[in-house]
Length: 367
Ligand code: PLP
Ligand code: COI
Figure 1 (cartoon, rainbow, N blue to C red):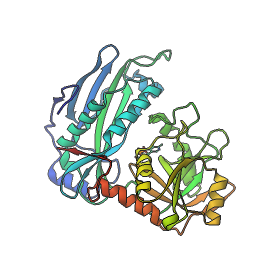
Figure 2: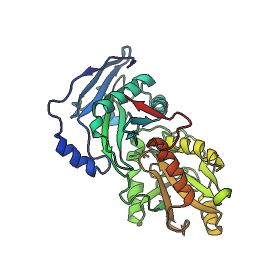
Figure 3: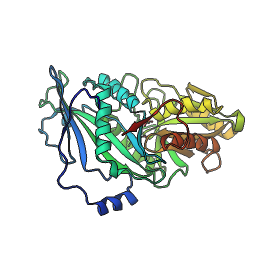
Figure 4: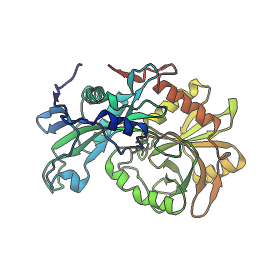
């Protein structure tokens, strides 16, 4: 393994018994079980990255004055390791996650991590805990790299200068237990997720903390997910929950896609980017643009918009079947997942699980 750092390896002396692990893997849920090990790497200004470790999964001792606990200087990423049809283990576009973490780091005044060190850390953890990768369709080992400020200081005149990078891994099934049944969404006018010049395009924990009230409001209105609108006019559609949105116009050979353009407030999803590349190969043109809630409603009512889906690593593709707001409500399509959404989903899953060709070299084998 070529790495920018050598990892010190300490294996757990209390591994999860195989029978217990198999019980977890039979029905892992999402993000609630964790493997036996984790990665930690420290950073200090002037010294760079140091103390790279693979160690037993467990609590992290923190000074109560650590900056992250007060000012949320934090970043995270999310990607999956898959067991492919032939038994090989792969991740999907890990260098894209590394690059995004570094873009987030620049926005949050945090240190960038060498992309190869990021990928080496993932590989080492997956290799060590490979028995934790569930093998059934739709299952995977969700990898959660994250980084936070450990500097002990309450002042806010300068960003922290010490950080901890960690990777944990969680055997996971479907993100939404109801599978790919279309979800209902609530148009949030009271809360915004992100504003121009803010942190929407950074994958930082504060964005998600700020979204919980909007998500709770969606649930109060009987909806599964919240749709985030732009911060200024509250009418331009940006994201759904923690996913990017894709609109399907027309059907069959005439279908085309529109997804909101990256405007600084949206997170640049790797699933979104993959869709933008795969769809044209399947004969489906794509456009990055703008769509208002009025255009969304009118398009569904005229039949021009036939399908809408959210896309992200966790849920892959999540069709939207019903939209509700304080002054409007409408349905999309038939209430079943649409054919274009399903075709794109199958194509992407096929690449990830090794049952379809990988034309862009996205699949990253772990030996
Ligand atoms: N949008 C937000 C706000 C997200 O948090 C995520 C995923 O974490 C996405 C979109 C989808 O990104 P990706 O496809 O890289 O998982
Ligand atoms: C995604 O992977 O699409 C997510 O949105 C992850 C989420 C739990 C933050």
